[in-house]
Amino acid sequence: MNILAIETSCDDTCVAVLKVGNCKLKILSNIVSSQVKIHAKYGGVYPTLAKREHQKNLPLVLKRALNKAKGPKVDLVAVTVGPGLDPCLWTGVNFAKDLAQKSDLSIIPVNHIEAHILANFINEQRTTNNEQLFPAICLVVSGGHTQLILMRGYGKYKILGETRDDAAGECFDKIARILGLGYPGGPLIAAEAAKLKTKNYQLKIKLPRPMIYQRNYDFSFSGLKTAVLYNFKSQSEKIRKSKKYIQAISAEAQQAIIDVLIKKTVRAAKDYKAKTIILGGGVAANDELRKQLMSNVKCQMSNVKFLVPPKKFCTDNGAMVAVTAYSHWFWGKEKKPKSVEANANLRLE
Image (cartoon, rainbow, N blue to C red; front, side, top):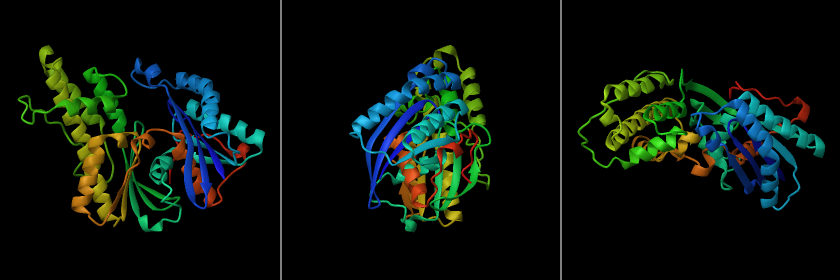
């Protein structure tokens, strides 16, 4: 069976083809057309502009994906239906429905958050019967979402906590804008932080770790962004423009976010006696988060598995939608095209 998957929840136009045989998964193609350069000058994604780009790119990306997969017969269509930007989601959904109707195929609606979680299973050694991984605590961190989710099995989710304001990725973007680094903020802040070699830099910066000691699983990053702004404004113009200052405050801001994410995740894993900690989402591509979370799991919970996707599957892509669709197909959840609709505020529970 071959699954054609479409992802347009934000500013990446993605199409993938996944081959399934004997519960083994093989990605035949996974094409991503990024709009980062288009939106960079605005410091964020403009939904109507992103929608127009999706409309233009989808036929081209589909053709590239099918050509790379060597034109297989498609047996099932999958598409992200939410959460995300409403105009972008509907562009992908309508395109997928049109394809499914023309070819008389069933369609599987996919939750974007679940897809980020199941990106960890784009590995032919892991199948939908891998129950020894559960219960699992899933940390999903992206530009629009920061959530801790209890996963009791495939399709069995409970949101334990989430951000009350800015998501981690959104916080990175806003801090980068304050520092004049550009967009997207996460990779740029990580790059500046990596340049800071001097441990005892004379301009010591200490930023807050919001909600880190609260006994819930929620997050809040808007205060951290404000703290960066105040610190930045309190410096002289000479210091603001210095490389060392930008590197130091980038490193401290990144570490503040990582500290909160790790503390809450490990606490949840202990409280729910998790067998696995799963990391997913665009921010999961951050080297320090990956390294430090893995280290904490090994030190504090040596019997707990730690899963994180390869970086190319952390950011939005069609392959994660395809593997999620396979899981839904396995449990008989495919639908007729007419019944599939986008939902920008879709919840995983």
